[in-house]
Image (cartoon, rainbow, N blue to C red; front, top):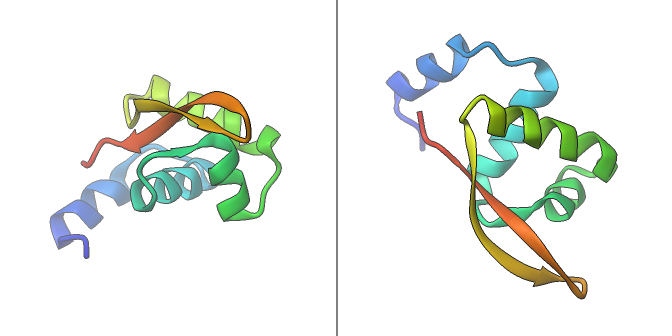
Length: 82
């Protein structure tokens, strides 16, 4: 459960709706790759990858490790807790 101060900080971020959805998905599922996030949210991978890049550029999501997923080595993400 998030503390009230974290909720206030999250609400003040300059994120659009889709970025917020992706951030929450990564926050609650650390270690997911883009495809796992897409599956979790029932979205197309082409909707996920650009939003993750935007969050990385904002410093809100970072690489945590690589793993093999469906026969390919992929990067996995974790959210920086605010």
